[in-house]
Length: 185
Ligand code: 3PG
Image (spheres, rainbow, N blue to C red):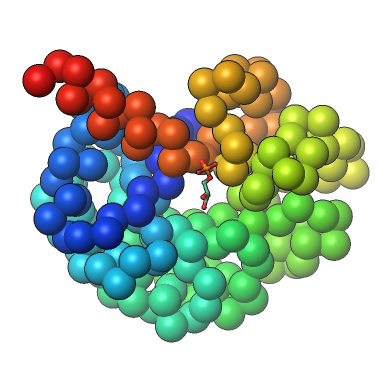
């Protein structure tokens, strides 16, 4: 997977081009479009069609229904704030990577039992940040993490330096990309 996973919130379908173009221009090749807005599935379908060189996934997928909608729209990976067995089963069946939010040993064990070895660590800043990730990696050396929530330019390098980091998630990638694009105009 790509190292940077921007958490994208699209309020209106018409914003999709601006956001994805900004990300693309910043060299980011992934977008996690979140199911926090009514147009999420539509935005995913639009992005999949118009940005074929980007990996378009769905985020904030909290149940099987949303997962099915996301996959029907063409999402190529699924992210949840927590762990949903229903979502995990659908993704496993369709061979789609699923990154559930796991912050405790019990949650990580539940993910492992579902065959998942890369998890989102969310909200990373609240659940102990890098210190917690290092402690969790001792009993779970096979697990890779995607810290998300409270990660930004001030701490991204610390996370990236740890070898159990699969990727970094965050909304700040979008903010930065949009600011960069506006400054260049
Ligand atoms: C998420 O859903 O992953 C978070 O809202 C992202 O957190 P951030 O805004 O602190 O990056």
